[in-house]
Image (cartoon, rainbow, N blue to C red; front, top):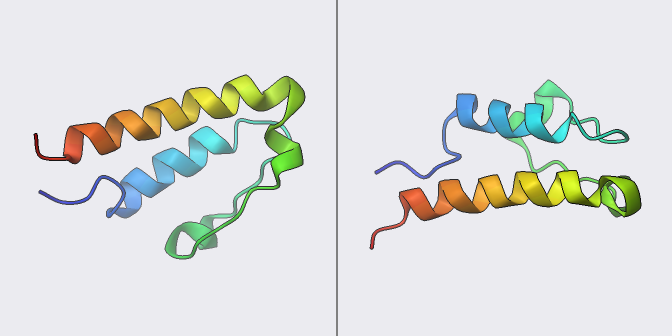
Length: 67
């Protein structure tokens, strides 16, 4: 089974989700790199949104891991 974020489409989906958080702007050319997010952008008012996205990421990782 392919790792959950190996394809460009899956990384694009993650990038799109993260870019909905005000203050986060991951550019398309970062899909093949390891972009960073400033912690200040995901703290306080936007922390819950970030955690929801990380829950989604964890779900994708769980789906891909063998039981």
